[in-house]
Image (cartoon, rainbow, N blue to C red):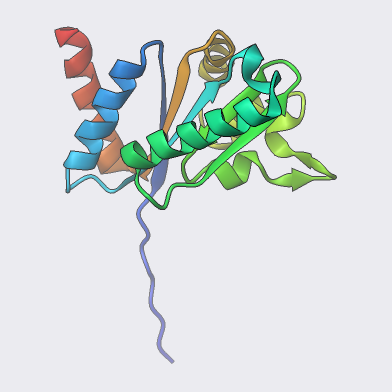
Amino acid sequence: MSSSITKTKEKRFFSKTFDQLSQLEKIIRLIREDTILDVQLTLLVKLEKSYRADIQDAAERIEKLYSYWKILLGPKTNFGVFNNQELGDVFIAGPLTELFLHDVDGKKLAELSEGPYGILRGLGIDGTMATNQVKELNEGNYLFLVKGNRFDIDGLEDVLRELDKVG
């Protein structure tokens, strides 16, 4: 009789909000240029109230968002939009899109009352941090989620701390 134990790398999540698109773009470019980091990037951003005003205009805006984020995140990036009662319309891009848009009795998981908060908690994000980040998302900030192994997430946190010092 033979057996084997397969060790898998522990996956962790890192989350941060950005109030400026330029800050987020800079971080994403740094991560994508680093061939050593093995991480998955997801972002969420609240859409303006005018997003739904004109269906044709809304479709064009969403198509522009898809094109923009495909350039930044890569051509195989998943996209979607959900409407949460507290947040309004939220655009999501990245591998966690399917989780946020998962159907629960005819409704997207993120559209449920505590949907975004519950998803963040389920990913292992601290309750206070999740509450603050959902609040900041509601205020128009970008919510950035990164999935990776402990080594990559620790390295990413170090890089972000250094960037914060520089400004």
